Length: 168
Image (cartoon, rainbow, N blue to C red; front, side, top):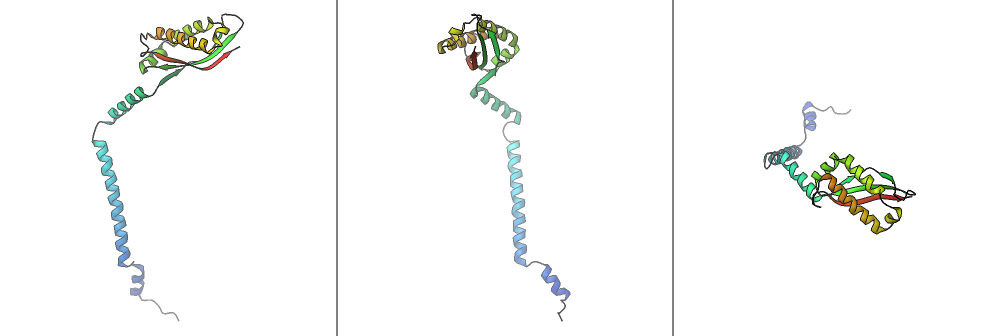
């Protein structure tokens, strides 16, 4: 028959050898150390330097200075001055600063009115050429800058972009 194990023999097999205990202890200590280092790094970052709000303001200023500001206008559909054609155009305005964008949004009914008047005063044959489109863009820029009170080009609309231009 099989020999029955004594309780002493059973206890020895349930306890891992001393070498395995040391490895497990080292792994646990290393994990705890890593967690403490990470927590300390986060604490240093949060407690040093400027408050988070100031970092956010700096980031916004960087974006304002580097990223172009575009304002997409609604689609315009107008009868042209020749009474035989119509123009459907989508316009995006490239603005010099955030303040100009705010003024533009505030005066949008006036901007739409002046653009409808400018667009409907044109003839189809004038708008077909690239030069005609460039002249229209220049006139739109001038009129919109007048409405939003931009006396200099670096304060208002910098460029007029036609994203769709259909004459029929």
